[in-house]
Image (cartoon, rainbow, N blue to C red; front, side, top):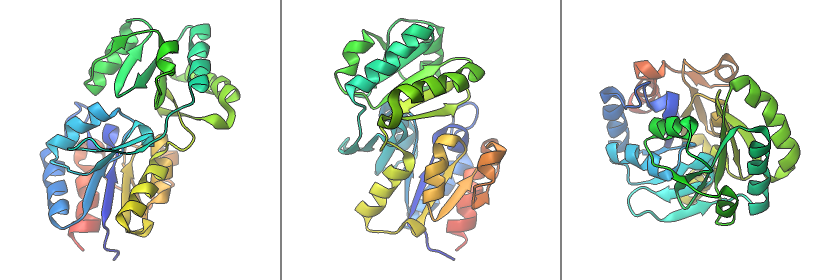
Length: 266
């Protein structure tokens, strides 16, 4: 079997349980994988500040893939290795769409989360990811450099709204759903797969030596890029069909199951 050298793990609904914690079995298995000489990193749509909390718990001293691949930043030293920011004009246009349609929108700059107004949506989001937020003029934030814009709302509405956003941004941005009620906009080169390719080249390894674990549509290019694409049992059927291997549910240590099978048992 292939001797894997890099493992990239999504957070929400993959490594994290519903209560947003890492199980002891997953934690111990990841430590064993690292002790074997394999690099383990996080690949998440979350902002760096949110991802770093879990990296610290896992004692990871590696570059972390955050903002869906828009930012790769080391866990301990905070060195920025890779960054892809949306053009300010794109940011302003997608923010204006939200204003016109009356839905919640938030933007990020310098690893801080900004909202135009305080509301239940931003409070729920920041409680979910464990970060703070600031109220500011989002059009001004757009000028500062933005790795991601996020809309939240009714899942069916967002499915339709995504077509409007794509019509406005064209090939100047990626538009995708990270969860049923979250629609996100990032730089066209800000994907987990492209970020993973950057790390592969930096480490001098091959994509065949990479395992990627995820559960959602925003994980697809990473799963397809890796030599071994692992999808959680709780993932949508369409994503499970594209996996090289379907592991257990995120509530039942699916990450540990996959790592034991493909890394520790080799």
